[in-house]
Amino acid sequence: MSGLKNSPFGKRLRAAHQDHDDDATRRTRPRVRGAPPAPLDCATDYADRFVPSRDTGDIRTSYHLLDDAAPATPARHRIIPSESDALKEQANAIFSSILHSEVTPPSPRRRPVSPARPSTSALPPSTPTRRRLFAYSSPASNPNTPTRRLDTPTDDAYSMSPVRPESRHLLESPRRHLRSVCKTPYRVLDAPELADDFYLNLVDWSSTNVLGVGLGSCVYLWTAHNAAVSKLCDLADQNDTISSVSWVQKGTTLAVGTLAGRMHIYDASTLQLQRTYNAAHSQRIGALAWNAHVLSSGSRDRSVHHRDVRDPATRPFRRCAGHRQEVCGLKWSAEGGPAAANLASGGNDNKVCIWDLRGSRRPGSRPVPVGSASSGDDGPGDAPLWKFHEHTAAVKALAWDPHVSGVLATGGGTQDKHIRFWNTINGTMLNELDTGSQVCNLIWSLTSHELVSTHGFSSTTAQNQICIWKYPALTMVASLTGHTNRVLYLAMSPDGETIVTGAGDETLRFWNAFPKGGSAGGSGGARSSSGGGRLDWGKLIR
Picture: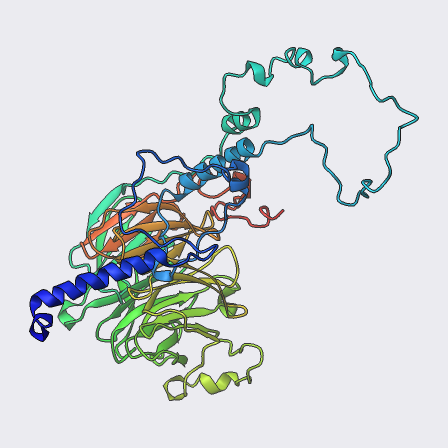
């Protein structure tokens, strides 16, 4: 008998009896009141139709429960502004207004209940003595009766429109005219040997309407009014290459920096060399900036030197050391005159420094004598007024706002992709914009409060574009494309209408970004009467 129990047949028989006992136990188990029944093993059969419950489908309540704030998303998933934002935002604003007037129309017949009105529910019911319970009046005395309403030609009963009169009025009202920017360059010039190097500055436009371009070992001048081209210099005999060019603010003087650390000053009107600094820096000079007669140069040797071009001495009268890597961006502010202007420098160490050559310091710091930091190369070097550390990539793009004093825009490289705005008076960051691509250059418009940025490597589909941003809204006005390489060089014509861009595709493209006619930035009455085309912000303040 024990052999039968241990046989396969006996094992299957015991398993069958055990399953039968479990089923019987489940059927006889008492059910607790309120507990849900045990789920059945069989699949649930559904009908062929699903009728949703619409008990809570109040459209007005749902409209008021909409969250106006945008959902908080991580920085890496931020939506980069696109060019069509201006038209899209205007259409969205109109749609929101119409939706509000249609879903929640005004009800003038309903009298608002004051919350401060005392409740009379506790008073005993009484019959009014001084007024009638039932009042009868002629229909002609009530303007809301159908007979009086039908006498009005603009009544809703005669309307063939599916929307209310308020919405029709909004749709038929004139809209703000948006500025349109030509998307194609009106001129394209070949620029052979234009270096594809992020750290160089090889294009600049003078106040006399002459464009200077460094191509290889040569510097060429292109005159805008007659399209004439002339060669300024050729450093091939010195086995040197142009690394930066910069025009003086007013005049025909052009400064040229080289890879060997030399600096030359030319008179473009006569094509003559005026001065040479053979040992201006120990390494290449990638950035130059003028402040009247003061010429500042930034180099790969991590220093910024300041020279007075009127002085025949070759040594700088001041040396600033605030960067730990190459200085690739320099810009002087225009307000305050040469004596009160500040210098902004950007470096490959991801830092932005603000310098004041007057020797002043920010509040709370110990003053330094002016003579202690002005002893040329023998001195310890000046210290920056402010130093900003928020960028996470090299900072080459620098631009001072010509309309608001003390506002500086800076752009970061491939790992940063941000444009940041600083208040250099108190050292705070005003705003930042994630462009989604490498920021190569920045320049402000002279006729409108808009900023132009050129881009390179991108994490989005758009690459090598030129963007125009509205400030301080930071909305994109236009996006210009055409270059096939990084747009590394940017300059603006003296009248502020045209910008020229250069890229590693060895082309120079001219764009009519800010045409005349008042469409670029506000009312024509705010223009300066001096003929410069700049905004007169005193007439814009209300």
